[in-house]
Length: 125
Image (cartoon, rainbow, N blue to C red; front, side, top):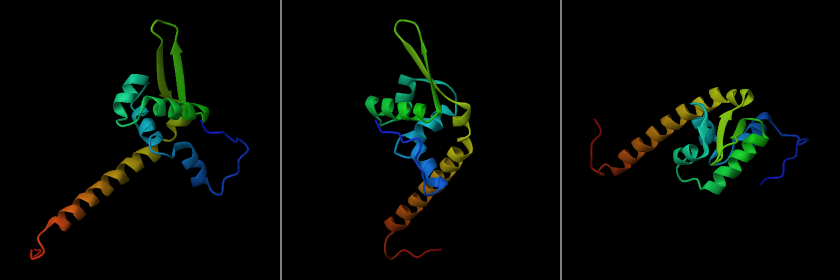
């Protein structure tokens, strides 16, 4: 787990934001939590390709940063749920803009691939 330096000074606000939501999985985890509270296994199914260990580590970091809340219910087997804190919910506009940008980017990739796959002698109309 990363060593948190709470007195750390950032070069700019973007660096601070990326310190919290950066990495391969955190944005995806947060995006799925926008829809509401999720149990660990539900999140694991939604975040395809993320190992259980990595998901656990990422959730712990997000909890340390105050954007995710972990609720443990005293029952057998233990029930654990994750949700966004009020502060975490403030990331919603950023995450939605990231989704929109990602959709545009993937469309652009498909267009490029289609263009590259066209025969060399094809005439554009």
